[in-house]
Amino acid sequence: MHWTATGTARCALAFTLGAMALSSAVESSYSQQATASSAPGNSYWWQHAVIYEIYPRSFQDSDGDGIGDIKGITSRLDYLKDLGIDAIWITPMYPSPGIDYGYDISDYTAIDPVYGSIEDFDHLVTEAKKRNIRVLMDFVINHTSDQHAWFKQSRSSRTNPKRDWYIWRDGKGETASDKGQPPNNWQSWFGHSAWQWDQTTRQYYYHYFYVQQPDLNWRNPEVHKAMDGVLDFWMQHGAAGFRIDAVSRLFEDPNLHDDPYLPGHNAYGDRNIQHKYTDDMPGVDDVLKEVRTVVDKYPGNPVLLTEADEPTIADLTRMYGNGDEVQLPMDFQIADVNELSATKFRRLFGEIENNTAHGQPEYFFSNHDQRRQWDRYGDGQHNDQIAKLMAVLLLATRGTPQMYYGEELGMRTTDPARIEDVRDPIGKLGWPIEKGRDGERTPMQWDGTADAGFSTAAKPWLAIPPSAGEYNVERERREPNSIFNAYKTLLSLRREDRALRDGSYQAVNLNDPNVFAFLRRTADETVLVALNMSSSEQVASYQPAGGGGKASTLEPLYSSAAVPGHMALGHVVLAPFAALVARIH
Image (tube, rainbow, N blue to C red; front, top):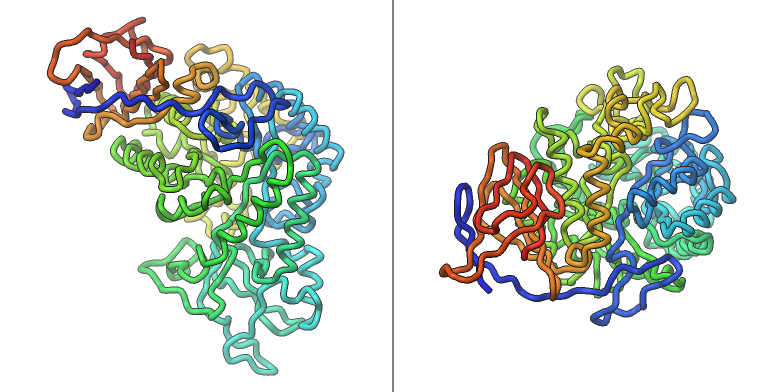
């Protein structure tokens, strides 16, 4: 059947409600594993899962030291289960000097005492499994801490067996009395040269990130063997998969060509640069295949996510491989739209939906390195309404959604007011232009008390935001129209409604600049999702092409604004920033 859209602020477009059933119902329990087959009719747990990112320092403190921990996470599993979460990705909890709060790892196969013990982790996995929640670990694959035993050995002498586990090079113009200049102009992501002079062995080592995070040399087979062992260790402790950190930065140009400069300067005073010879170099796909081979030895269909901030959807698509690399490359293209644009979202969702690898999309809008979406998409006046719209955009599309802790509350970015309060080193280095990432890592807001229910410490590691008095779990649970209850309703709908869970995706109204609308469809059900991304009322009318035929109606399943119990498909009114999910009859 063909339909056209007409009416106020609408476009003239014919679209086909094509029948395109996808996979079977979501698996009913953790113990019932999906069949390990890609044949039609079968599915994997991660195709239907909602993943929830936890920054462990900020989720729940169980011992009163002001820092969140594993026992704190365990104590909140019932909350996550009730919310509708299927898996949690926990950012690094390994021993670390804390320069990059866990992403500088000094031991890959242990738990940092600040978070607890390996026994605490095992207990977390056991309790999560009872609630059908899987636990994903963070696999920091590009670099270690300079305090890791491997690097300590590597820097001890040029003849040490682990010397080639990292990337060491002579400087330019080096003499017996002078270190000369760095080998080339490569820059750290966190400012200044990516090369650090080491006086002991009189060479420079390479670090894409902080000076204290030397890059591993992935051209060395011994590094592969050691890192494969890390995967084995955590799989044997019950991990259900991994989010792979900074995967595009694994290899560098062995000929050390200078990167091209770009106009302007960054927040650290450096000339802007194109990371042409340090990003997406050949070899990454082979490493991803290797990681997949290691985890696939284990039962339960473990999943891999990648921090894949690729420049295009086509670049992102390569990380699926031929179904033998990563199941869920994180889609930064969509995460970084950073404006309410029906046109941009429609185009990008269409590109990933039609990716040539036929890979499952993975969507998110906030994480521990990114300012919270409440601020980025809000207009300063309708932020709560827009937050509900973004919840529908995340949870009603076809793909695997990833939430960030507190997103379901409308937590906002709360930057430190003074440089003295900054914890993130890049905030200290780039202040006040770059204030760091503390603002998106503040403690979870459980209630309206002074400590937000996060900790009994007099001063938690980051200050409780003033907004916690209004935006918290306890208060929002009681308010039917809260952001929290919008998320909870949508998570329940996603689980229970087959079209939202299994249905195909098809965008409609392809020329509408204000409303991003699409269909989710199974053989016996069609759901319309319409998102008004404008500050004015929009009216849409959907009529059979050529006129005639029986009029259809819409049965709202969720609406962020008041709507009738049923409405005519020929006259759909969307309030400013309204989001509608409705079954077509």
